[in-house]
Image (cartoon, rainbow, N blue to C red; front, side, top):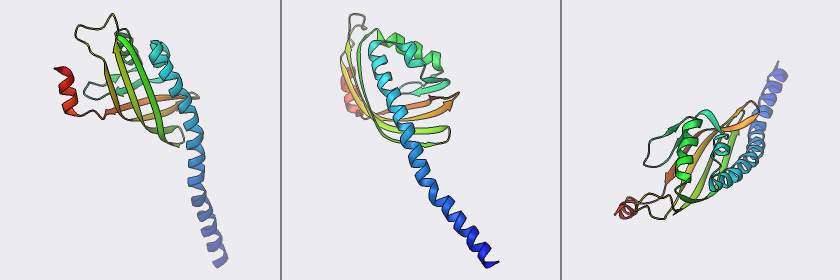
Length: 167
């Protein structure tokens, strides 16, 4: 009886002890996939290929930026970025800092840099701008593809700098 209890305890310890490595391996594999998606997203945003950008978002995705209403749904995300893409040149840099994956869900945390240079179609008075910030993205595996479900960006710009830009 004692031997059976010890065996159960040993099996439990082995199972629990193996979990972090399995999660770490899974996270590393998913991180590579996400970083490849991010490289494409940067390229597509800069080229104005918003259908390609939208294809990485789930049908009911939410994109939430600083100081703005959330964009809800793949079409809303595509339509918004299609409109603003024509206003000038957008340059993105995305740096993934961490990905934690567990089964069909992954969370990505990172930082971004965004630069905007107004073009001929820019609104009157629209100025060049630069932003840096942090982001958190929830990814889900749907039909064999990782898709963005929630994309939250938080600018690091101070309130003072935002006010100064509007003057």
